[in-house]
Image (cartoon, rainbow, N blue to C red; front, side, top):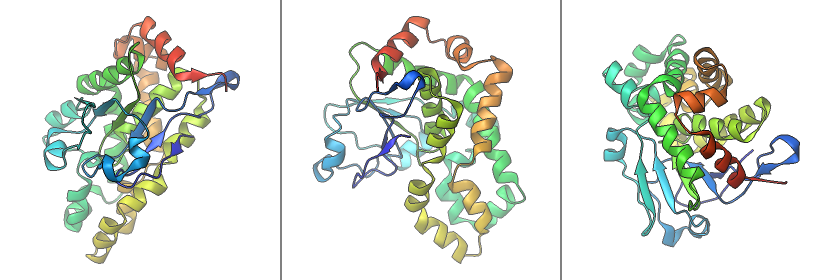
Amino acid sequence: MAEPIAAATVANLRDLGGTPLADGRRVRPGLVFRSGQLDRLDPTADPAFAALGVRTILDLRTDAERADHPDRAPDGVRLLVADALADKLAKAGVAPAAAQLKEIFADPALAERELSGGRAAAFFEDTYRALVSTDSAQAAYRTLLLELAAPDAGPLLFHCTAGKDRTGWGAAVILALLGADDATIEAEYLSVNAAVRAAFAPLVEGFVAQGGDPEVALAVIGVVPAYLQAAQDEVATRYGSVEKYVREGLEVPDEAVSALRKRLTSAG
């Protein structure tokens, strides 16, 4: 699994480096990081983050999320924007649950109306399918992979709001391309739960205190295997394999995939 990094101003910060791959290889450390939003980032007060040497930040959030909580990118760091849920938002007319966590927890009545009775899981599974199938999501993950494959690329960090859904799928795609098995990919995906729940604990506590359903809170704040499986099933249905999804859906050339593999893997 990715190594958690105890950063003072960034929630759910992890290095994919060290994750085991096939044939005894591992993801090379120090090159690809994942996290929650960077609205509180302060490199001068956060030596753990500053030590990473991040050169590129890829923000997968919606326009509204970025406007409410803009990233604080350090000087000299490239900040790229790739809204993975733009098409999903345009179609639904309202931000998916993955993009409006704070609004949901501020309004137990809204949560009850929209997410009770198993609807939270259904919303998230539908969102994960959209992360595979929509043009905006495909453009976002194409950008992620091409940036990681670039010959002059430095350490890159990609993130969404909580760093669990849009970011989780991005990590799953990277690890699948590098040769991680299904169990490793799922373990990495689920391993963020403790950090995410800690980061959102005050919101959850306030939500429950106002009469919100704890089961709804848990369904929204965490990740479960069924969410990841929804995206994986969408890949299998539409493309048959992750390789074809990357080649045909994301339109990432084979040469870029080869470069990514060479750059991001080590002998162990």
